[in-house]
Length: 564
Image: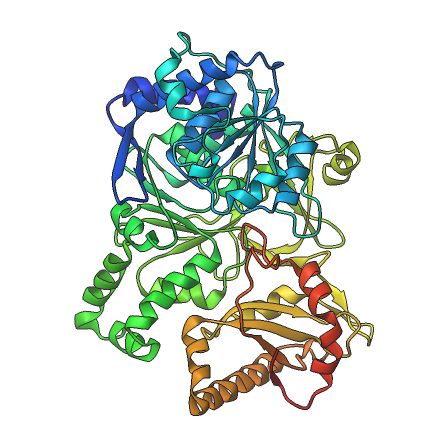
């Protein structure tokens, strides 16, 4: 039996993993939590276990049916994870909600899941969001909940002072449903992905072995814990590996929070990697930086100085996921000595599918199948994945479950891909994203977007054009490029550079893929504008619905660079 097979055969549940950390590292710091007033509080593993047990005791007093759904809506904080653990201790199922959802989406998820209780924590815009929370749901307020949320039902602090911790250390069966994760919904109503404790135990065990993580590592948690990738990387990985987790208080304090943590493991989506790059280029222009990094005597000093200023001088593993990372961005970080390992996975397999090992990185590829994962490409080019971490199914959606999981246990991902001779996977697009031009030719947008994103002037790109003679590219600019629009001569230079970009990009594409125009939007697409998911993926369907009446006029103009 191999080491990985032996690990899976002897899985410990997430709760058992917690109890192990309590015993081994009782006085070691588990969480570092900053507060809005600038203060910072540390929580030891002993304190984490004690607070979870007290909250579990309170939940048990609510006399809910075993396996009741309990919602959890908050920005990242120590008590998000402690509340999740308490829900499991009390015998129930956690239902995380993104902390930036509209009241309509909140109500949809709470109604669909049948949640009986909701934890409310760090939230901006609670007054509007609260309209989606039914009046009969019992509410528990986390320590960093908005002041306006207080006074209803009960606050965390009151539970800590009035409830004794449960005296035992309950363990849930591995095949019990542990959580229902609602997908970020790029196309419509989110689906509730059911995962078991076995799923989480497998990820916590195998992912830790894969990246050789341990108690001396550090992570900064800032991407939504409601998203499966952050939850797997931070919460589950920490329970099994015992490392320290730092939290970020807000976007305004992110730079300081990152420097405080000096993470050894850093997980980010492409948008974050781009933002960090822009911070460096604001201080040192690209041409000058390239020249300095090619100078043998001072290149080491420059790399160390820049990465230390970012708080990333201790990073030994940088991981990117959730969306494709441009090849130029990976090369740029490599020049600073930071190797970004791409990964590929879904909510449906709890963020465990494909990963890049150190020394095996290949630009444009997302790595090879992780241990115990079987991947194959279907006749129509779809990526099919069989994994011990595949979901149990979609909550209350048997027909959708049957479409996603076939009789052999393979998850139909909806992504197109190809595998090289070394077993590394390349994502070539989404089956549903491929569109047909009016000439009857099919266009896959993802590879074209990757080509365009190699240009640091662009921040977001959406290639579209169903039923147009030629596709067009909708784009937003990086902060640095957007600043050039305020000066006419700078603007003219930028437009000329983008015209050259279209020309060189088209030269590398088939004729039916050639871009007719590049349309610049003044505002970056955001979650709030409903053009991005909470995990910062483009909502292509929504973008098309909103702007498609402009497509033909934009395509027909004689200009190749257009300002929307």
